[in-house]
Each structure stands twice: as structure tokens, then as C-alpha cells.
Amino acid sequence: MFINCIMLSISSSIDALGIGVTYGLKNTKISSISKLILFIISITISFISVIFGDLLSLLFSQDFINIIGSSLLFFIGVFVILKGVFYDSTIDNKYFDFNNSNLIDPKESVFLGLALSLDSFGIGFSMSLINTSSILFPLLASVFQFIFLSLGIWVGKYISRFSNIPNYVYSVISGLLLIFFAFI
Image 1: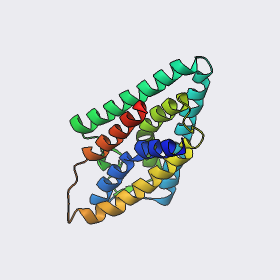
Image 2: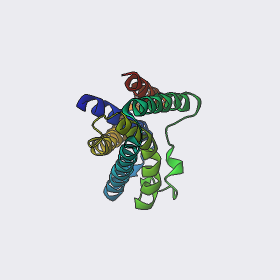
Image 3: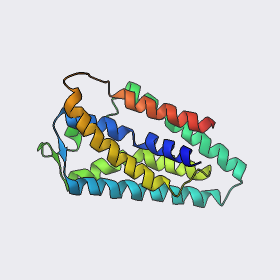
Image 4: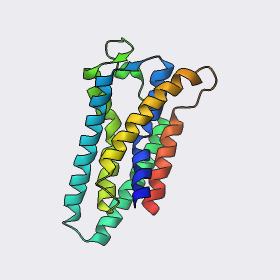
């Protein structure tokens, strides 16, 4: 179960790697306070989703809840893949760098944090329904999001000289992981 929680946390956070790479390629920085705000938003939204899923699991039988939770993970996975393939899912910095300063300030980080946490909400809700170490998910998802965003910015600064990985690759990987866990 712990391994499932880690893998689902990575899956919900991997979009941050693509966003970080995009910001790194465009030399956009995220202030330390903005990173803290992103972390707080991520852990809060993930925690709320887990509580909501836990409450719902009290109302229905475990078999029914397992079917619902697995189905949600499957459909979220399919949606993430389709979004990545048919719509560029990497969030371009022009949407969150409102003042074009090449710095994501605290106000802008609130919008970025909400956008990054949408997948975490659905995944946290689904995994709490299927009893997969839901208490650890908010913390792990937030930590991985922070790591992937920071790593992505660093990588983006350097890969622009060597390689151009399509943005949709991160979404496809994330979606495939979700579908895999839906079947497990």
C-alpha cells in the first residue's frame, strides 16, 4: 500500500515537472515564498480530497467504493492522457506570470498552486475510497510536487541546449500510472 501511495503521489505531481521545465526554458523563477504557498495549497487540497473520500466511504459498502474509486482513477488517467495529447497540458508561464516579470510572485503562485492541485484532488479522493494509505498522500503529493517543480526548473535551464521533450509526455506518463493503479 505504501508503494501505491508513493506512485500515486508521483503521478499526481508529475505535471509539475513539465511546468518546471517550461519555466526553466523561459528563465522564469519562482520565489521561495511562492514555493511555500504552492506547497501549502497542494497539501491542503490533497488533504481535503482525502477527507471527502473517507467520509463518502462511510456511506457505502467497500465493494461499491472500490469500484467507484478504481473507476475514477481510470477515468482521471484517460482524461490526463487525452488532455496531454490533444491539448498542451503544460501550463505556459504567460498564464501565471501576469506581470511578465519572469518571476512567479506570491499572488501568481496561488493560481499556479490551484492549477497544479486539480489532479491531486481527484486522485486523493479516489485513493481514499480504495483505502490506499490516504493519510500519507497529501504530504507525499506536496513534497513530490515541490521536488518536481524545482527539478523541472533546473532541468529546463539546461535541456534547452540539448533536447526538446514534448510537453505532453509528462501527462501521458501520469495518465498511464493512474490507469495502471485503477486496475490494481
